[in-house]
Figure 1 (cartoon, rainbow, N blue to C red):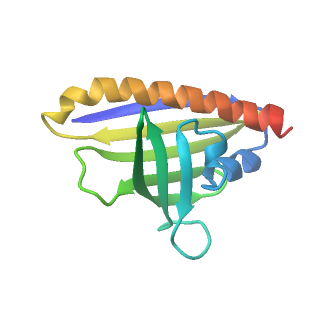
Figure 2: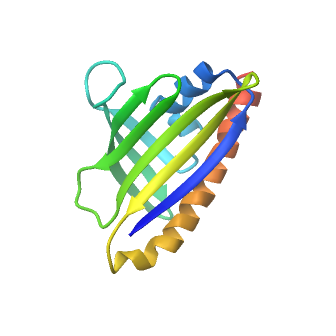
Length: 149
């Protein structure tokens, strides 16, 4: 079964600024409210094949995951997929940046795929991801529009 979670926000900053800030793993902790750290562990410039290890807080538990960039088209698009451990959920993400009247529209799409019996958890996971993204995007807007203006 496949579930898709979409979020979007309009940020009053140029597209190049928003893309650079959002896609840099070293700044992600400034706006992703549950992220503790992110570490790039592939050599060279950011691009397709770059791998990032993240550590985040989920309730009282710390979790880690590795994701790899699958599409990298500055300042328009970055896609990634979580790799590594065998997990009951396969997750991919897409960030799309669009220039709209001197502002940037950021659209996030998260696709989650799993099989029974884990499909029973998808409505809860989808709700939690949508709520987390809403909080993160509000923080991102604050950081880019107020704190960095």
